[in-house]
Image 1 (cartoon, helix red, strand yellow):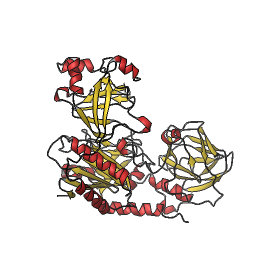
Image 2: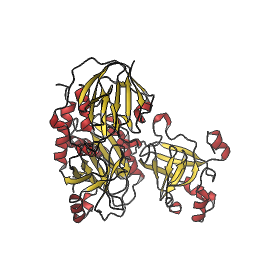
Image 3: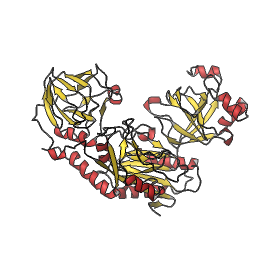
Length: 234
Length: 300
């Protein structure tokens, strides 16, 4: 197999200073274990070894790895990665992706698409909220904008198409759905996801993103009083 | 801290740049950094500075500064008809400035080509967050921790000064989904002169020309390396550069090399570019030689 690294993992150069590691699986969607594995690998490369790693991007079933060509060779990195996978060969290995509880005020005043989405899916609002809050999501990737975490996968009943055009301003903290993914907008920005509520939680505390690939997220429904008490704005 | 200069007029696209941020892309923060690494590295070399010292990237010109202390500075990249106290000076050289001197960048010239000039100083700029992340505005003032010393004027040897109007064939390293594009699409790519579109910017160079197609129905978003050529459904290639998003889900042909990207970054619409394939080993070797030349100990 081209780029064979270890079983079910390939590593191929994509540019003079970047390699793409891929988990080769049959399933279309990544699993929480895979997200945790790649998040754990990213953390190892950034924080636990000093080996010339410039940037990493763990996303779904791949991890992009940019390195300093003057400090380390592709062969050295292959060896390093092989050893890491040998230590973590069992995908069931428990990585310490953090569990975040995110309070959300599900209301049409902060979730402009809440009512229309519920109507489209023939759900009442409470049923929609229950579907969105009754499972724990994994962070499969962070991108699009700083700190924007792609969470998956929402219940098939909540599978929602993106708006056909971008909305000019989606407020920071907005909780949205697109296809079977859900996410929180970390800052005010244009966006095309269907917005069903808003969290008062700061997604970019201490100038760092709250959520990282491999973390898990549990949404909790809160009422208006609690939302305002936590600093939420209407 | 010593004040070094103040900005008296700032074009819309003047920013402080280094050679790209580290350990940021996993947070969704772009790498950024100087678009033209060739001109950037030469500016530092002229001043015998560390190869990655930060400087100003002056895109499209319209920058005026006034020196608040004497220093050495260097200008490389595009010839933006720069004047020092009203006297024309050329890029690819270092100069001395005295307190009160005025340095003015005018505009790119269709006669010489080039879009971005680099302005480096012989001292470490003390930067707050605003100056690191944003574009400059009039009134901004820059300081240094310690002033540099008087030094000789240096110039870049002529053979290292690029002609930004010369036809550009960029080196493409096949990668990502290259194998999922048909041979006929690859032939089209390699035999077409693509026109640079005027919506090109620090994020991406958008090209117009013969359409490229592929048979990929869906692709999970993945990390995007510098220079990736993505092909959206309209079949018109987009080259993703320094300020690109960190991940994306359009099929990609591979990446153009960093040195090709540097040369591309000095071109503007409607100039044309073509593509040629290179092996990753050859590209890596060339890049290592380039980086070794500049990252090695500073010398004359």
